[in-house]
Length: 116
Image 1 (cartoon, one colour):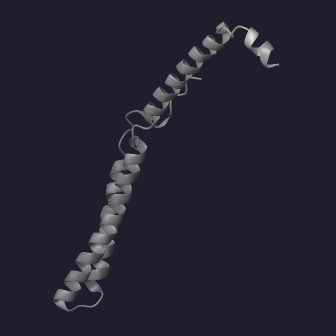
Image 2 (cartoon, helix red, strand yellow):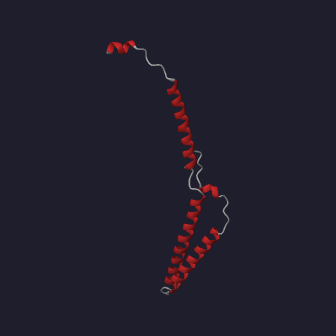
Image 3 (spheres, rainbow, N blue to C red):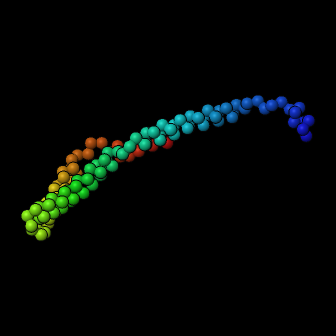
């Protein structure tokens, strides 16, 4: 067996294998480009959601803290706490309403492009 293996010529490179390698490299490059395009960061919808969440949390927390400070300073128990809490909720909802009533600039930015 060993003698017959050494008598054979080494295999020449097959055209099909080199063609397959080229197609594999080009497919990997296309996938890298797609992955780079997809991983740019948060899109407009995610940024808008973050803004809405920050307004809601900030309004409620800010009103609660200001109300607690005024109650502690003036000696009233829940009066300013409740007043500023509901005022903060109202301001947060108003800001969210203003954001939601703005026209949508580009609705296609939230949808991924699919070239397949």
